[in-house]
Length: 221
Image 1 (cartoon, rainbow, N blue to C red):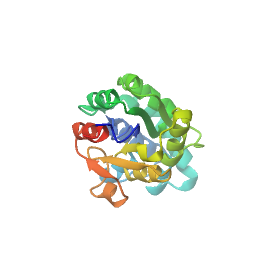
Image 2: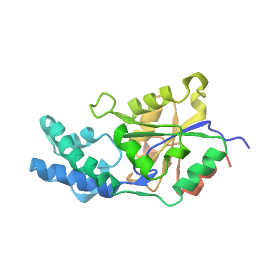
Image 3: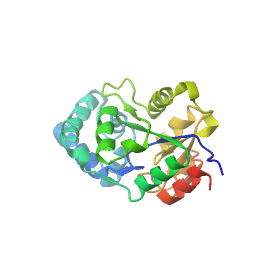
Image 4: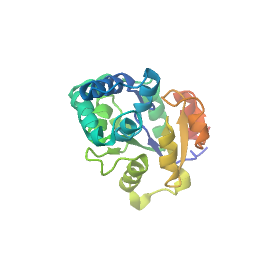
């Protein structure tokens, strides 16, 4: 059976790696630096995945101080906390199996691209994907829709598959909505950071519960 998709764009945080420990400790550092009371632990988990500046603004940081919060976060995150992180069990095996079936793979993350490259190299993801595409540090490419546009433009545009044969894979609503902005469907994964029902409410094609199930769906089994 031929795979239903020719290209899968993969989110990073909450989809390929469990990055919450490093992200949340860096977020707490940012709030402490600004002397602002941090959100609850439950709300802090919502920082994993979406654009950082947007999430600070939604959780008590005044608009004029958002750049300061982002800078404080990046100071400690780039210094090493990004590696307070781990691969989800079975992810590398899933990517290898999907790639062997002829599906092209690329990472598309709201994380700054310079950080994403360090993480994918560290965890052995690079040999399994065509490219790693992310946000810019200066915010000129920040939303998930912007990142997906960047990834689509970079992944062999002369031989680009039809949008119906491209799929996003992610764990949060911004993955679904960012893909939809380009006429692309999104497969949700249940092991990330979405709240119950989040992915279904915004129109995920389906929500898979294990990397093995993701493999089967992407291979058309």
